[in-house]
Amino acid sequence: MKLKRRNLPELAEKVAGGGICVFVGIMMLILTSTAFLFTTGMEIVKEGAGMDTTVNRIFELEESVVYYSDNFLWNLIVLAISLIGCRLLLSAASKLRFRYQAAILVVWTLAIGLIWVFSSQVKPSYDSAYVTDSARAFAEGDFSDMSGSYLREYPYQLGYIQLCEIIFRAAALFGGMPHKTLILQAANVVFLAAAYVGLLGIAAMLFPDTRVRHITFLLLLFCAQPILSCVFTYGIVAGICFAVWAILFQILWFKRDKYIYGILSALCIGFAVLVKSNNLIVLIAMMIVAALRFFKRKQYVRDIAVILAACIWALTFPTMVRMTYEHRSGVQLAPGVPYVSWFAMGLSESRRAPGWYSNAASNVTFQNLGSDPEAMSEYSKKLIKERIGYFKDHPQYTRDFFYRKYVSQFNETSYQSIWNNNVRKQYKEKNAFAKWVCGDGQTAVKRYMDVFAQLVFVGFLTAVFLMLRKRDYTALVLPLSVLGGMLFHLLAEGKSQYILPYFMLMLPVAAWGIVWICTRAGRFACARLSAYIGAGKGGKLLKKTLKRFNVKAEA
Image 1 (tube, rainbow, N blue to C red):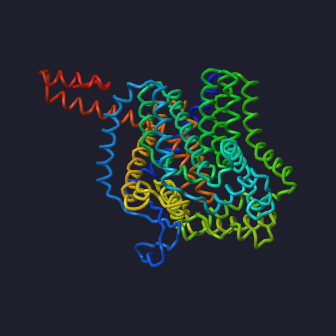
Image 2 (image 1 turned 30 degrees about the horizontal axis):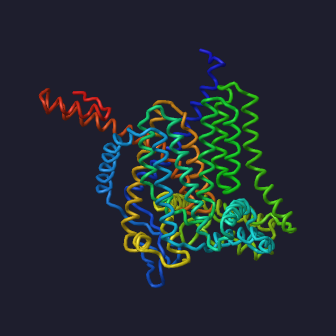
Image 3 (image 1 turned 45 degrees about the vertical axis):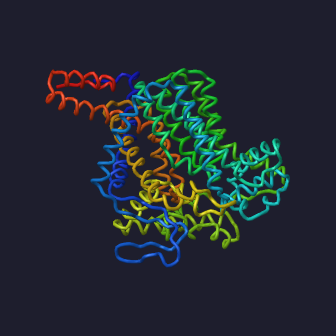
């Protein structure tokens, strides 16, 4: 039987979508099963507190990855309690319309986020200090940092530097140039609130079942990692905000077929890549989804225009910003450390964890090579070739290397949010609340984050298999972005704080999985209880109660 030509686009979407979901499902199955057995910790290990035994190897570092064993049975019990909690809160959340949920999210995030920023009093250090200090200097007309070593090595940071400069200049209009970066941390809180509204909108647009939006609302409300990460001024929060809205506008473009949404999507992803280049992963995911729907939509000219605009803006915005700064300063910047070097580092050993930051192909190597980008590129390619050869000759080592690298990032469920508050300098002493979270209460807060992440992982994994079973790939852009992040950070430099954006993108999809689990579990429980209680007053009361939760009691 010949396949009709008009069915080819639909077949291509199903084959590609099915393949992507299978791949994501395998990766999530590994992560979820690991999460119930082990937890990765991010610790500051002081001198004398390290360990080098056959059981454990903990290095004395400011950024030390530690693997902890978990209680599998206890994790299952806590998961069941979490699901029951979602079910009970669902009825309350379902009474709120979208605009009220969005308003609550904004008010809650701004309130808690700003309280945290001014409680923690974190001062930038290392890379974040170089970036924010340069932004403040540029806002004051001082371009001496353009000739410094940092921007000579990392010119791609100019995108986030420009955003920070704009914020500094805006703040200066209302009371002079701020000497603290708390204004940038407060801006992160605003970006996070906007990202949360965007994620809620994505859930509303992608899933007809309104319960998915309600669970997404609850997950966003109780997600602590992004709020604690607002003190880290490095473009991660701002970047994911623009990326989320780019995805939302793309969904609106597909559903409502209005050209303005396509343009807004292209602009947002351009800004996302400008602020944080890792968002090229989201751009690629969006382009794949657009390509899969290209022939099905039959809006060839408009779709090509939007796709080209997104790609051109994402690739040219950083160049335009760089040229602007070069013109303002009169300093021409070299290409800097080539991107291939981050892959060389990501395939190398590190005292932190496999593929994390090390001196292999680092800025130190770049300086030793005379800051020559071509020499650095050749060195990195040679190192990659050597590492690939070693991986081929040692298959067991290769499996252990990439497994450890994977779980050291995605299963470090605080995503360095607490660590970023502890490792950096202070403007002044933390208040009692921040002291407790980062001190005596750190174990409890991390445990809460771990439980929350396990719930998200289970929900996301369930939803991916639901996509496969139902062959419904309308939400494919989110799992595809997560898969891109997994593959990229398996190969490039590893660091768990870079995983936070992908964790946030999991939430709407995870909500779908949680709704399905709660519904199925509810029906199963109802069937058993109805059989025992029967048709008396107790049975009628049970059925009436279950009706409120949209659960059918089938005997």
